[in-house]
Length: 190
Image (tube, rainbow, N blue to C red; front, side, top):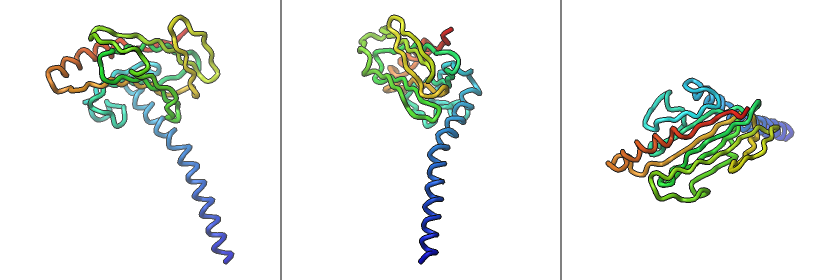
């Protein structure tokens, strides 16, 4: 009877230890791989605009939806805060900006529901967002939104959806959205 209790206790302790290690380690391993992949073609704190139709190493957004026009960056706010200039085209059916900590926890989302809807193709809303590190501070100016990251390093992701990318209208929309996509950028604040 004593050996069964010992075996069960050892098994439970080992299972708990493995579970704890996996839960803590896996997000950081994934985050490290994602950061290395992004930095192969872009610098840190630089927004990279991807083509959702590309496959292989040039598309670093895991499981990206081919109907999205994504932009992604790996950030580091350990030394300076970052100012995001986000261009939101009010005519797309879906737009979002998400921030992820280094353990891939999603801690901030801004989407099309949070911004006034625009009707015209040419109505572009610029959203200014300042990202500071966990020990950083920043006094917002004018219409800036200040977000504090729980970690110094992490990721940002912008997604715009193209509703019917293969129709004539959809191809035209993709062409216009790629121009809007390039209007979003990031800059360090001195």
